[in-house]
Length: 286
Length: 311
Image 1 (cartoon, rainbow over the protein chains, first blue to last red):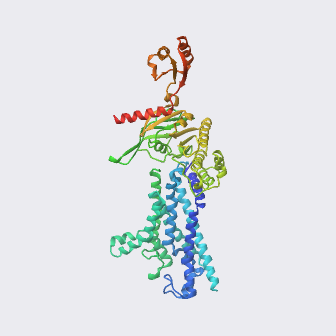
Image 2: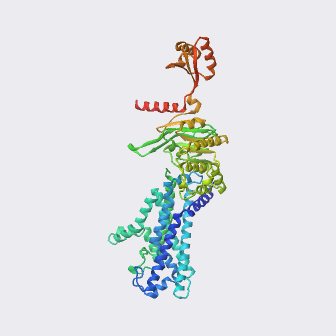
Image 3: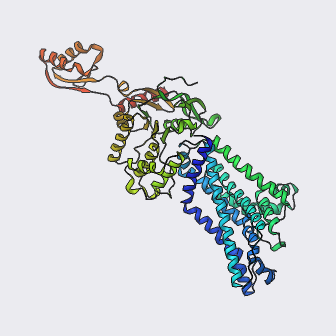
C-alpha cells in the first residue's frame, strides 16, 4: 500500500468515525451557539433595548446595528475564534488524538496496514476537513443571522465584498486549524484526552493572558509572548477586525502586525503536525 | 540479520525489550528467538507478566525492540508490507465505544482498503450480525472479544495473531473460538495464539513456545514437549508385576508409584505387557495409557526455572 493510497484509506476511515461521533457535533454546536449569542443575540438585545453589555459598552446604537448587518458578517465570523473558537477546536483536536490511547483504538488502527505516517496524515486530514466544515457552517450562520437582523430592522441588505469573505474565511481557517492541531499534538504528547484538554484550556484561556500581563514588566517574557499561538491568532484576527480599545473582544489583539502574526500562526501550522508525526512514528503504543 | 528456515512467517532473533534505565531497568523480553512456520497454529504460553504480550506487540510493530530483530513475512515488524498481511488482536479489543459493531468494522475495513461488505461478512463469521447495530460500549466482554477477532480476520490475512482470544468467552464461545482457529489453520492461514489456558493450547496448537520471566524456555511441538506416553499397571503381586515390567521396558524406564507400576514406554507395548503378566501368573487389575498434560510440562518448566533462580 503506497503512502498516498494508505493516507487516503486512513482519511476515509477517520472521516467515518468522526462523522458518527456525537462529541464532534456537540463541539460544533457549542461553537455555533457561542457565535450566535456573542456575535448577534446579546448585541441585538442591547441594540433593541438600549442597554449595554461588556461587549457593547460605549458603542453607539447605529454602530451596533451596523455590526450586525450582512456587510459586517466576515468580522463577526472570526472575532470569537482566537479565544473561544480556538479553545473548542483545541478540545476537538485533543479528543480526536488522545481518546485513541484510552480506548486502545490506536493499537487497532496501527495494525491495519497503513504506515504510522499515513495514519497520522489521515487523521490530521480528517481533522482539517471538519475545521473547514466548521468555518463554512459558521460563515453560513453569520450570514443567515445578519440577514435576519437586517430583516428585523428593515435595513437594506448590503452583502460583504467577496474578498472580505474570503479573507475572513482564510483567517478563521488558519486560527481554528492551528488550535485543532495544537490539541491533536497535546493529545498525542500526553497520550490521553483529559490531561491534554486540561493543559490546553489552561494555556489558551489563562496562561497566555497572564504571561502577556507579566510581559509588561519583564522583557524576556514579553518577547516570549510574541510567539505564542494565542498572540499569533489574536493578532491575525485583530488585524482583520481591529481592536477597539479596552472593550474589544477577548483574545483579539494588536500585539503583532499582519506579517508577524501570519508567520507565527503558519509556523505552528507546520511545526505542530511535524512534532505530532515525529511522536507517532517513534513511540511505542501500549 | 534474522536467520531462520525458509518456511517461517514470523521469526525473532534475540528479541529484547527493556523498560527504564539504570537500576530501574526492567527486562520484559529477554533475547527471545522463536519461529512460527507457515500454516501452523503456534501456541505462545506463559503466566501473566511473562512477556507474551510485549513480544506480540513487537511482532505487530506497536512496540520497538530494545535489541534483536523480528521479521514478519520477510519484512521488518511494523512495515506496511507486513501489517497488511497480518491480522491481530492484542490484549483485548480496541474499538470506538460510540460506534456500533458494524461501524467499527467499517472503519477497520476502510483502513484496509476493503468494502463495507467485508465488515458484514466478518460480523457473520463471529455470529454478531444480530447485534451489529448496537454500540460497542453496550457489548458484553465476550461480544467485544468476538468483534476483535472479526477485525483481525477481516482481510483474510496470512498471519493471525490472537492474544488471549478466549478471554471473556463462555464455554460455548470458547469452543467456537477453538473451531475457528482450527478452521483458519486448515485454510492455510498461520495462527499465533497466546494463551494461559493450557488445555486450549494442547487441543489446537501444533507447536508451542513457553516463555517465563521474559525468556523463551522451550520451543517445540506439543507432542515433543509432552514427551512419550507411559503405561500404568496395577497387578498382584506387585513384585512380579515390577519384574515383568522391567523386562519389557528396561530397569531405568520403570518406577513404582504406590501400588502402581509406571513404565515409560510406548503405548503399543501394552498388549505384550498384558500377555507377559498373565504368563507369569500376575492378576492384572488395570493397564492404562497416560500422557503428561501440557499443564504438567508447563509447571515443570517454570518451576525448574524458579528453582534455579532461588539457588
